[in-house]
Length: 268
Image (tube, rainbow, N blue to C red; front, side, top):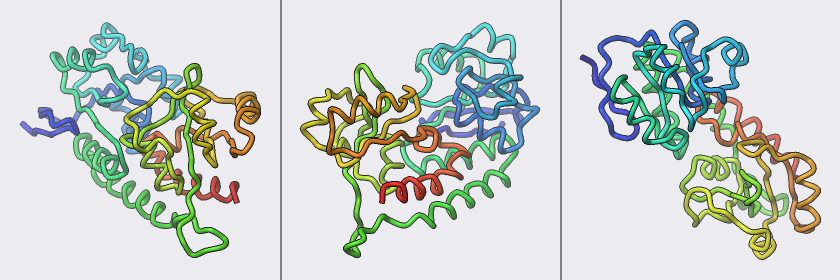
């Protein structure tokens, strides 16, 4: 029986290529679609909004942190694809008692490539997975470090990336978003913090970031929030950004480098 090791180090036994998959991670759901697993995926979460046709037609098994076990049991999956951070540990452990569960743990591009490669092998889509990894690597290779117009040296704006309001929350140095910020050419002022620290507006005023990025998810920051923060941080450039292109670690990575390049042009 084939044995696969997931990114948490757990053995996952699969007697055959899975034909009834439940994905409880939005970015990995989109990846499965782009790998050509239209017929194999039976269930997704209510947050798996891409692709739209799956969002409208596939069985929804609850939210990423509030899975509906009864619906999953009715689907009788032969593989569940989860994520260490996005899903609740106790729920995943309960599902592991009944089904093979492959769990990702992603903090940077390297682990994202590994996830895509492994899911390609597990689902019988190794060739399209490898081709996708090559495309993503090629696209990122074209993204050069930001260079100041006055010097040949790397010029990175001191940056804070907000993911939540009331309380304000940002991202620490051990997150996937942090790694994307670095690659995009921004200097995360909270790189020495862990995970997703809560911060007060007074802290932002004290640190005086050159750039404040307001993400579209999980909290949907809008222009009204930009205006509010501009009155409190008059010397900081504040813009809305597409959170999916900073945080989705599946096939959407193909489009992140071009987005980062456009973002940097906007700031020049």
